[in-house]
Length: 198
Image (cartoon, rainbow, N blue to C red; front, side, top):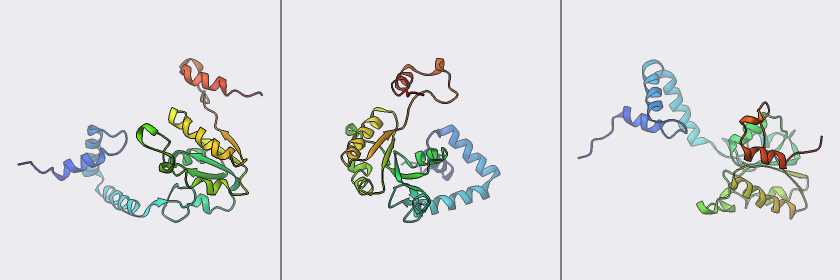
């Protein structure tokens, strides 16, 4: 007969679903919450439950929101002539920190035929409606520099070019403040091929 897991063990296992949280880290978190911060843990549990039940995807850009449109899509002061295509909602947060003022489209992944992920699986069937908007002038492709991210960018660039719109790709290469001796050769090669005249 199999022994049922204790609540303590269930809590440790539940925390392991988080990226970067292994068994030892989960145990430390559980013990910290139980020993010193039960009220905060109860609050966390309530907020997590509400978030899982109420947060969905924006009907326009597909990022996370608890409303039909996210706060970025509702903002009438954003630049409708530029659309930035990203892989994940976390990419939106990163680009917002760089003071980008245009619109977004979140793929929620990238093309990966080996994993059975095709265009419709990442929402590319929804993208044409945004591309056909007459106010749109440029599409910025901000997918990752992985093989899948590059393939996704190429696929989308063909969709954009077919509509006569301008398409650009974010630069990849040496990070600000980075020293060349610590950057791998592939990154340097990408930076060299993407160089621009100054």
